Amino acid sequence: MIAQLIEESRKIVIKIGSNTLAGKDGKINFNFLDEFAQQSSSLIKKGKQVILVSSGAQIAGLSTMDKWARKKDIHYRQALCAVGQVELMDAWRRAFSRFNLHIAQILLTRDDFNDSKRTLNMRNTLFTLVDEGIIPIINENDTVSVEEIKIGDNDTLAARSAILWSADLLILLSDIGGLYDKNPKDDPQAKLLEEVRDIEEVRKNIIIGESNSFGTGGIATKLDAAALVQSYGIPAILADGSKPRCIEALAAGNQKGTVFLI
Ligand code: ADP
Image (cartoon, rainbow, N blue to C red):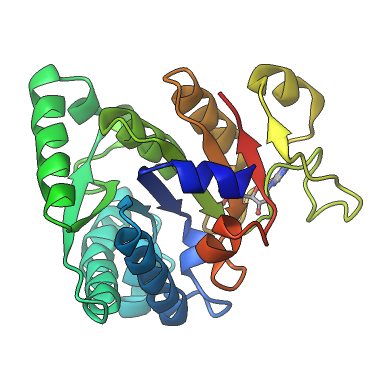
C-alpha cells in the first residue's frame, strides 16, 4: 500500500522531526541529511516534486550556542532558533548541493495561513520554486511565534503546507515505525497499525504515550495532521526516518509504516 501510494503521488510533502534530524549525540546528523538529499534527488528524477518541512533549528542552535542550553527564557529560546535556523539551512544547502539541487527557506507562522492574501502569495511562491526544480524547506518562524500565534508543531505545519500546495501525499518521518496501539518505547509488545482510515476511532482505542526529548507534538499531533490532510483528500504516511534510506525503502515496499487512507 505504501509503495503504491508513493508511486502514484507526484507532489509529496515530507516532514522530518527533530529526533530524526538529530543523531544520538543530540547534534544534527549530517549523514542523514546527505542520504535524504540523495533520495529526494532520485524522487525528482522520477518526475516527482518534493517540499520539506524541517524541524531542528533548536538542535542546530544548541550545537552552536551550547552555553545557552540551560536558558529557559523565551527570548533566549527564540534567539537560539534564529541562530540554529541558519545552521540548519546551511546543512541542508550543503547536502542538496551535492546533487545539484537548490533549496529555498520558507518560514511561516499561524497567521500566514489565516490570511487569504498571504496564503495566495505562499502558494504562488511554492509553485514557482518547485516548478523551477528548487526544494522549498519550510519551518515555523520561531522569532515571531509566541504561544498565541504559534502553529506549535511541525506536523500541523506540514499538514497545512500540504493542503496549501494541493499535495498528493504527506509523509511524516519520525523516530518511530508508525502508529502503534501503545507507545512501543513503554511496551515492546505494542502492535503497529499499518492502515488507518477512521482516525477518530483509532484515537479512542490506542494509548498515546510520551514524546521524545526534542519532539514537540508527539503522536497526538501526527494524528491531528493526518486527520487534517485526510479531510482534504490527501493521504498520509507515518514512518521511521532513522531506518537506512527510508524513502527508497518505503517506495520499494521494504519498510513498514502507518498509512492514513482517505
Ligand atoms: P518527532 O520529533 O518525530 O515529531 P515526537 O517525539 O514528537 O516525534 O513523537 C514521536 C514519539 O511519540 C515516538 O518516539 C513515541 O515514543 C511516542 N509515542 C507515544 N505513543 C505512541 C503510539 N501509540 N504510537 C507510536 N508512537 C508513540
